[in-house]
Length: 398
Image (cartoon, rainbow, N blue to C red; front, top):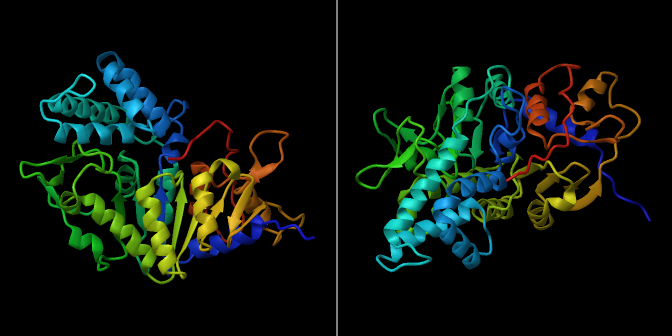
């Protein structure tokens, strides 16, 4: 009986061709695993913690004041990450009034939510390293060709790293807001495709530093690193959600994949977010001509949510460290002994290399450094210097 394997050279040569040409509609989805896999200027990791690390830091800081509430909410909830906790806290702040739950009334939970957002803001308000970084390399790839369609960047991260990378390169981008003093969100512009291809699109699916509500309850962008409007607001009623950016941006993700001949490439994203994964699944089911390539940092057995979607949608592929699911077939990677071309050796090393000396080679593009370098060098005609070896220190996706 034959045993299936996936040849990384075959798939990466095809991807390299796709991302090097400028005609295809391409989007990138970047999750919390990306900045979690990056170093600070002093060489320490992470640049920004992923959801698990963020949760630990925030709760450790707020624990002395809100220990009873945190423990009580953990009993009530099956998931204890900071996003789930914040959503529940905001819900309580709108419905319980003067009634106390776990020792706090609505005003108390409103203050607790503000404290959580403020703490998140402190943690994620960081700058890119002064030299080359994965974000600047991705922007270099985006701006390095005259495109038929704008590249769209979707991210669940609250930080301003992409904004900084675009601005360093003096590359124009649109994030759905218009104006200067109190930039307002314009859903009509988000849904349209009339923007010049020179302008990249940056969609902050979970909100961003610098977003807040004005006196009319509308979300505006302030240009300041305040952190009052983070996390998809699960507790909001349907009509309120429709007025906020969140629904419009999720609809944009679905609309992108509903367009013929589109490719969404993800990195640092675990697909555990039910809202985003549902939109992607719906769009892939409705449009077999679109594709998603999910580059995952961990081994395939640990990428449960991504693999689950790949088994349901054949146009959703998972590229993990040891194995891949492509066209619905899960199989280990196996690189042939012969190179596709005589110049392919350095190119292969950029995605297929040992993570530590003496260990067998593994697929590397689930790590943000290798991923961004591969994209940035996609138009190199022959060989290029490979990305540095990727250490096995955990960089969890979210």
